[in-house]
Image 1 (cartoon, rainbow over the protein chains, first blue to last red):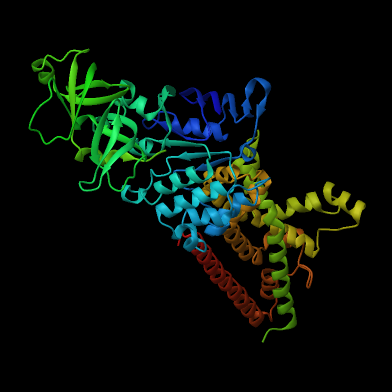
Image 2 (cartoon, rainbow over the protein chains, first blue to last red):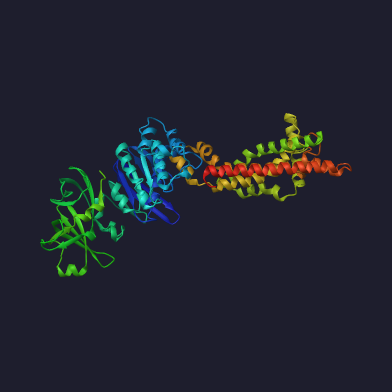
Length: 361
Length: 229
């Protein structure tokens, strides 16, 4: 467990955070710019003075009451910064070994392993200024990991890389998580990165933790919705592949006590998936319609209707334990006489689901 | 081509300038660190004091050194009694006078690079397990090298030509404190020194140009290495 209970006061900014994070897993610190995500992550690493308490897997890193404040260099918390911060006077290989040479005890990450996993073989003799943005972050990741940290803090590692190049780095994070079982704090204001990587999300704004939950639970909460932009609003569903039709390429996944069929690439039976079903891709009907191309119609109970700032309405539909979100107009609500508690059919296009398929588990 | 006295002056100039650079190097790194990173009362006073030789007439600096380090000065007297070392009117004295005069140049250059170093790199080193002294020698100091080299070369070039402070504190003793500018001055005073003056001036010019070229080559190499070229 990573137990955090701390306060940071800086100029006019105040951060107040209490979190109990299970380890090892990836926890996203998610929120808008200036929310205090980076400050929180840096306070955990010891780079920002804070008071309160931080305990990582039973080791006290900070306890203001007892006068404990382990210095950064002995916290064993690896950091990957937004700007990589590779040492410009050292070659890639020397950068990689900087922390490795200074760690004590047994190494769980060996140089050969890390260089291989991150694909750094051809970069070793280069200098940092000869690397692309994505390469720089991969080296920074390797350097942090080779210091054998107990926790990795990733501070918007992809923010300074253009979107197309993110895929040069993202898969490596998943590889490291799976290979080393190292807990990570992942600071991001990109919802798709969070959905792809995080096991749990701390939603932060104005220096406070607004919510801490799984992406599935958070995705249907109104607090999160207002902070992801209307294009990102949609239910996140953890599920697994229950059937696969090789002739059509469609796979079937469980949703509550129903199932959804979707375009599924090469997924085999039993693969765990995280689906992001955008609210704009879900249609509501009061009775099961006939003669539609839509592959998926699931019955559920209309749980709540929330006004969005743009005049539209987001409907939450309970399908067993799962939730779906649908974005509809005010006039549709009136015409269909939609009220909470009534049964509705949620229609989801099979083709629309493929975009939001993540494999986080 | 050059007579023995002129070559002796050249040798002495190089010895004095080199030694003063070696003497001021660690001092300027330490002072820059204190002035940029230090938080202590009276920092502005230290800042002003190290820059004093830049604004004072060199003769005044030399005179000040004489008062302080001369055989009857408080420090010089104590030094002589306890170790038998005399600074005034010796090569060591010339080196010290040159060092004091060139220290501000050195500090300015070193300080500028130190101010330009991204503290984030030091933070990164901390997260990788580097304690303060380790961090200084593996990250901060290497990143300061361009400024240290630039400062050292400027100080060396300035040190070759230091006149006022040297002649006041160390006098004009052939083979001991008569560096190139002092030799040139002496030749100018002599009715038969015209040719010698020209040769000494040419020597100074040659040394200066070599210094400039070396400085340029070094800084170019260093910028390339760090990817700032």
